[in-house]
Amino acid sequence: MIKKLTIIVPVFNEGKTIYELLKKVVDIDLVNDIEKEIIAVDDCSSDNSKDEIIRFSAEHKNLIFLENKINFGKGGSIRTAIAKASGEYTVIQDADLELNPNEINDLLTPVLNNEADIVYGSRFINSKKKEKESILNRIANKFLTVFGNFCFGVKLTDMQTCYKLIPTSVFKNLQLKENRFAFDPEVTAKLARDKSLRWKEVAISYDPRTKEEGKKIRWRDGFRALYSILKYGLFKQ
Image (cartoon, rainbow, N blue to C red; front, side, top):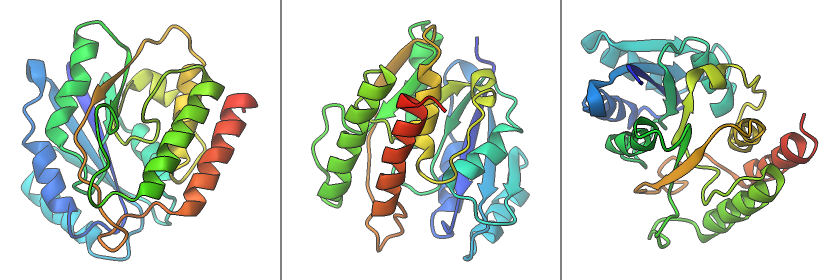
C-alpha cells in the first residue's frame, strides 16, 4: 500500500525550466489518489533557480524547499532530500523538461500490482535515437548499463535513468556517497545486493536537451560512473 509518494527534485541552474517543471509535478493526478510530497533541493545555483523555487513555493504550500550551501552535485542533493522523505516510496525527478512527470504513474503501477519493489523508467525500451540526442551519450549509457548489469547481476536497459522508484526505507539505508551522476551506478549496485527485491523497467518518453540548452552531464561523468560500477559492484564498497 502506498499512501504517499515522495518526489525529489534536485536543482542546479535550471531557472528556465524549474517553475514549469514543478507546476507539472503538482498537477499530476497520481493513481489510487496517492498523496504527493515534493522536495526541491537547490544545489547552490548561480542563476535564478532558487528565486523561482521560492516563487513557486509561495503559491503552492505543498512544496518542501531545501538548499545546499555549497554545490554538491545531483547525488549530494538527493542525499539532502532523502533524509526528509516521509512517503512509503520515493522517486527522482530531474528539474529540466526532458521527462514527462505524468509517467510517474507508469512506474507506480507494477508496485501497486505487487509485481515489483523497485521500478526504473527506461528511455531505451523500443526507442530509437532522438534528433537532439548525442550518439556518444547514447553509446556511453548503453555501455555503462551493460557493464553494470554484469557487475551487479541485474538486467536493465537504462541504469542512468533519472526515474528510479525505490521504497523510502530501503533508500534511506543505502549509505550513498557519490555526489554527481555516479550516483546512478552506486544506488543500483547497492540495491542489487538485496536479492529479495524484485525489479522491473517500464518504458518512458524522453525529450533530450543539448549542451547549449543546459544539459550538464560531461565525459568526465562517464569515467566516474565507470569507476563507481567497479567500486560498488565488483569491490562492494
